[in-house]
Image 1 (cartoon, helix red, strand yellow):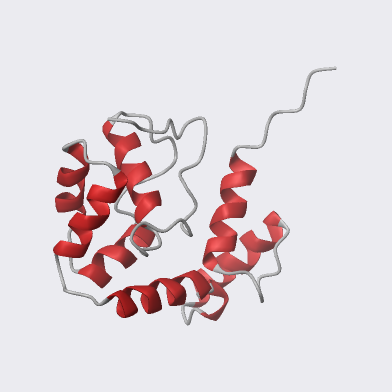
Image 2 (image 1 turned 90 degrees about the horizontal axis):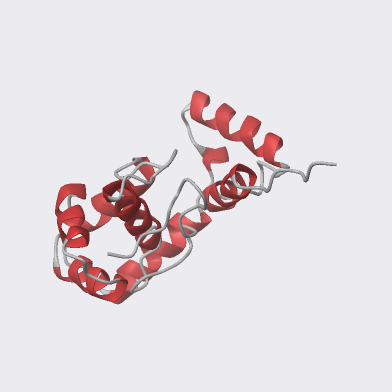
Length: 151
């Protein structure tokens, strides 16, 4: 099974779509890395992954089983299509577009909202315009910036 070593590089962006599902590629990367014991600070079956699992009505354990089988991305995407709650291509696209546009800045939970604002500022993002995916990508980049060369 091919996996990314998430101690050395981040998983794919949550924007990368497999069969039009956002989050799926990233979840696959995290699961494969976890199976190889190379997940670093990333966690499969996290709240982000659960957005997809709830939308499709699938479990993290069932998706993990499919990934453990050695299936490739397209085969996993087909499995997601065929399992859980039936969704039309239009429903999948609308959900993916909505999740991609979502911002924690508008979260009613004051603690989550404040964390997002503070972390966006740490990453140089404007929390009023940054999406959750903007924030995740910036955090990934910040986590894997090369160490300055020794002089």
